[in-house]
Length: 427
Image 1 (tube, one colour):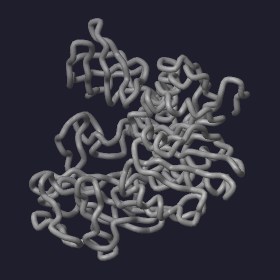
Image 2 (cartoon, rainbow, N blue to C red):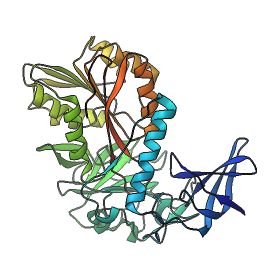
Image 3 (cartoon, rainbow, N blue to C red):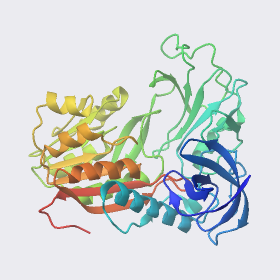
């Protein structure tokens, strides 16, 4: 056990301290605290530790509302021991630090509240539970394959909790995801262990015991990442921008009930699409931004969405069928743009996974000479890296907004606007 003076926040839910000249990344602590910590990992360059006793608390410290939060317990939440205001301030510091460190940009950042999460709880509309061999469900402990059994999750949406996944035994499953969509659909997605495949349409693997749940809840099998209906439909409906979207039950959609609309509004404000323009929506998912862009550019304009996931592409094409100016191609970004013969664009919207764009995609996007690039990111480090690379192509960060779409966790959602150097900055 070691005593530490806790310094500034770091990306990923850690704070930074030093012990005998070595950097220590500490969880369950806050800047300015003195804590007694247990070392959980040691590398050649740094230590990781959990604060197990607070000797001098921060004024921002509160008692975690969830009994499963704390050292060695559930790893789903990072900041339950801080007030919501402090959580947002910590996230803002992380975004600002990553921009300065990786892109050389100094910027004041404010993390905005997203409507729909009173007290920072009850917002997660999709929760994926791990399953022990005895069928008991729980959530992974931090940086571990060990499972913390839970009988309720406080950040889960009330409609997710009504499904009652935690109260049932799921022997034979690898994971179970509970889904409550914004349009009122509910589903349970049962993931098959490797090598155990469904035996036919509409039938679950006989090794999977699916307990009785409410008949209004769809049961979906997940095989090799793809959704297959066992009871009901393999898709749920989501709503945003005045439209209804069909999304695979195990597919991607913003999990905070207010996030899809909030991010859509921010993207449209930054992209400023105009009739007749040519726009790209890269990593388009089920077509949320594609649809809004298509409505704005009109039939005299055009929008191309690119997405690699098979189920998402199928659903996006269905969701956009009333918009002839929009089309979706399946594939990785660079070959898909090459195959479509795309050489320029007025607007490029990107919403990549946590790994970000990467150098090759940045170079390909920059070559399009778009007047506006709108970058939606769930990872400030990879976003800052990519913004730095775009800066090397003559693009500058013209505006940035950050949103607390994942209260109680270290995650933050950002929307950035990049414009060619000659353009005036926007607010």
